[in-house]
Each structure stands twice: as structure tokens, then as C-alpha cells.
Amino acid sequence: MLTEAEEERLNELMTRYDALENQCEESDLLEAEMKLMRCMAKVRAWTPEMRTGSGVVVSWRYGNVCVQRGVQLRSEDDAADDADRTEQVQEKASVEEISLPLLTKMSSERTLAVQAALMQQPDKSLALLAWTLCLNVFGSGAYSKPAQISLECKHYSLTSDAPSGKEGAAFMAMMAEKARLAALLPEGWSRDMTTFLSLSQEVLLSLLSFCTACSIHGVQTRECGHTSRSPLDTLESAIGFHMRDWWQPTKAKLLRTPEKAADYRSSE
Image (cartoon, rainbow, N blue to C red):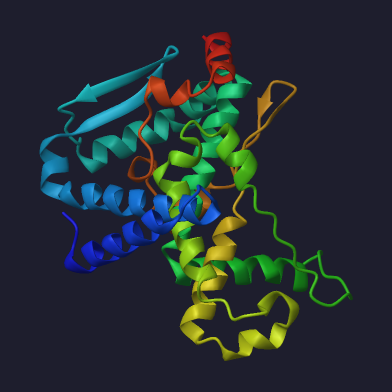
């Protein structure tokens, strides 16, 4: 269910959307924000009690999506003992067994989801930014040139490779926030840094958080038969990230295009 404020916002977006004569970047952003609002309303409707009573585990097994319903949590002690014995072996085996095209798809989907999750936690996003900058200032990466800060936003390649493409909840959340922040930028900001001096600390914090989230890149590669370790593991633990909050695997999502279908068949 949408809140009263969300209903008003949705009506406003629909009015602006209907006023546009042709499809354009603005209409795409409006549509993304509307889809996101409806999606998040559905997520809120799924209460913790409902999740506990209707446990589902979705996994990838022998080239197919495996759904296990009615799963109950084991005791923490038993789970911890099993995890200690099998985690390292199973993780290495499961990653090495899948094809490189599928590895690229899934790690791209994972990257988009982590970006969206980090965007929602500005304090941790800023901590990551500060840590990254300190690596260059206090570590071996320091340079004498001023402001040697760079950011690469990989959304084009990520949405091209990720099964959900541009229709996933994570990417739509990112685009909705981008549209919101773009509307707050002062006129002529790209030509004059001093325009940012007029922005509030709240807006600056949101901009820093969003840009930091956009810089996240965790697509895994494989060289000489060895799969690279994901750089997202520690970050995911720090922000309490759960992939299921942003994406649920289905065969339809994995086979969005004939090219992806061919990749999928080659991995079976």
C-alpha cells in the first residue's frame, strides 16, 4: 500500500508523464520512479512475520533455478559449525563451475544491487569514500597533483550484462534518486564550482553518497581457470546487504535476449 505522501507524489509524476508528447530521458526517469514506488510498496507489504512463516530459498543448481519452500532456519550453532567446515570448499566449487558469461551476468546484477543498497546508507557511503581517498593520501597511491580523484560509472555495461537490465529494482532506484538529485543542482553548476557553496549539507551529503554508490564495481573475471575474488564481500557485510531484497532469479530474467539465451545454453 502506498502512503498518502507517495500517492500524491505518484499522481504528480503521472501528470508530468502524461504531459510529455514523446518518449525522452525525462519520461524514462519518471517511469522508473513510478515503477520503483510501486515495487517498494509491494516489498513493504511483505512483513517479517509473513517471510518467517513462508520461507523460500532460491538457488542455482545444475543449470536450473531451484526453489525450496517452507524452509525453516536451523539453530545458529549448527549453522555455524556447518559453515566453518564447508564454506570455503563450496564457495570455490560453485563459482568455478559456472560459465564465464553467467558469472559476468550475476556479478553485474550483484554490483547494481550493492550500489542501490549503499545509496540508502549515506553514513556508510561517506565512510567508504573517506577510506578510498585515504588509501591514496596516506598509502602508496599518493600523488603531488591536486584533486586526483576519478570516478567511473559502469551503469551501461552493468545493465547490459545484468539479467534484470534497466528494469531491475536496483537500477530503477538509482535512476529515481538521480532524477531527484538532478533537480536540486543549481543552474550553471557544471561550469562553476562555487554554485555548490549554496547547497545545504543535506543535499551535499546525498550527492556524495549517490556518486560513491555509482562508483561501486564488482564484476568478476576469470583468468587461467581461476575466478577473481569479489571486492563486494566485506562491503556487503558492512551495510547488511541481502541480494534477495533487490533481485529474485528466474529463468525468464536470465534469458532476456537471444544472445543471453545462447550464453545460458552454452553454460548448461
